[in-house]
Length: 328
Image 1 (cartoon, rainbow, N blue to C red):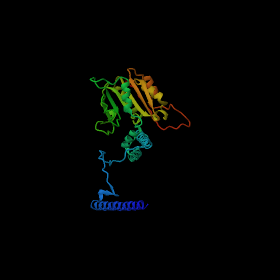
Image 2 (cartoon, one colour):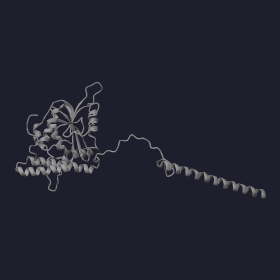
Image 3 (cartoon, one colour):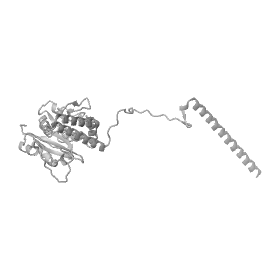
Image 4 (cartoon, rainbow, N blue to C red):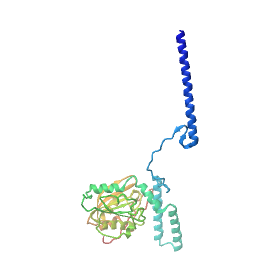
């Protein structure tokens, strides 16, 4: 018993000494760390070693204003732009107004357009509005499906893009693209009004007008746009038209997409296909050699006539297309 008691006491003293030695070592380490932190404050944070950050190749933050992201804001911007531009053209063509009144009204409308951001804001909004449906992807996939895409060693199909807001079609390797817009946002996009673009008949295999016809200010110019695009196309070439559904379903001058489609067909096109979303309609037509002038005047008369009536129906657009009778 005495032997066991002495062994227990020795073990207890040994553990006590070891504990004191360990505590002393910890204190020495803490003192050294504090001295190191005093010499170099950044080398120690809260008694822990600083982790090395991995180098990244991230671009520096942009100083430019943030890009429009909300689709609701984008729709409001496009609606405002169209309302003001159409009102400006209406006032300009109103012969009943005297010069002073017309000048005052035009100045006021132009100021409103400038305050809303003008065409730049409209282009930003167009990018947001079309982000859910990429026109370029639809065009390239449709042309491939229709056999327009050529094999290696063959001439590239020629495409004219009217109202280009990006370079997605321009950078398609198997296409030779001429892109233009009234306010270019890229060096490869020609800054030019479509009606000033040199006319070369039967040149292109495809013409793309994405959100363009609804921006043209007058019904007669919209009709001229359709005629000129057909002239640019080769026989058998394809015409892609993208426009808001509001222009077809909420205007007194167009009785839905069927009437619009028949009107375009009468100009010398054959309907190929259509793709509809909740907000946008996209049509693909093929150029043929037959123009139905009698049907053109019935569907796209000048001046536009009301074809949709309703006592309680409210229209969100006054979209219309007109054509004068002449040789196509």
